[in-house]
Image (cartoon, rainbow, N blue to C red; front, top):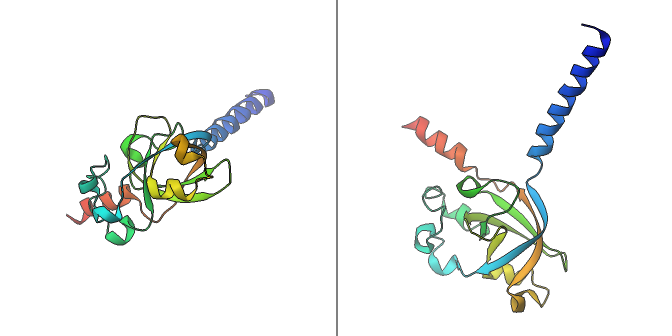
Length: 160
């Protein structure tokens, strides 16, 4: 092969690698609508099945310490893990009007192309207008929270 062909192949390779990494780093979005719901985990003993969230079967083995570490949210963001693949992960939510942030555990799906936050953290980041409007405009980022449902599932299956 000539030098030009090798250079073209190298450029295409770099582009493909960069595309893969760019795709992996799109676990965030800006100016997303976040509504609220009353999951009220403390009143429901932090029990996924009692609340009736979509992730209850995926997360049934999660210890209470981890279930209660973060408040809960439904996640239907455009970027990041989709549907039940998001179960157990965490999302850092920032109110765009005041910069207040809260870290939430994804325990539910939704149909709003955004988030459905538990009422308590929704009010925690409120700027005084969100609760009256029924929603906030937020930025979100999928972040680590010390629990990987897939790894726990594989570990459980290997132990059996």
